[in-house]
Image (cartoon, rainbow, N blue to C red; front, side, top):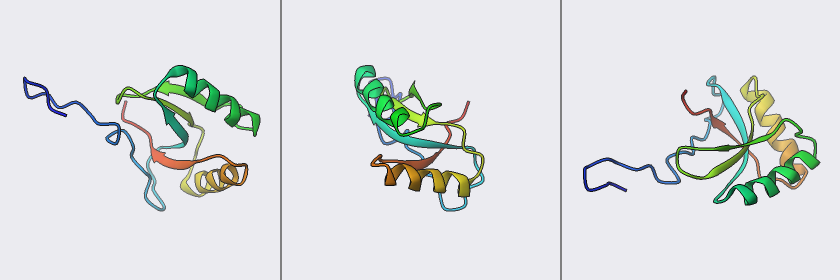
Length: 100
């Protein structure tokens, strides 16, 4: 979306930076995004209940709340964690950490 003064506002898809296979960038294990803090906290409870006790909620630049674990040290470790989370019934994928 572009404002009247030409400033471009990010869409909700601009904040999703899926990690390509074998990425060497800093990575996050993402469990989902929600439109409200309450909905994100509800998802966080489910994520922590299956063992991701260090997962957290962060407001991202696109105005949504992201549930993630940022302790990923390598692509293979992240891919293994994502597969484990999916086996536990969670949606999970690897994303490149946002700059900053």
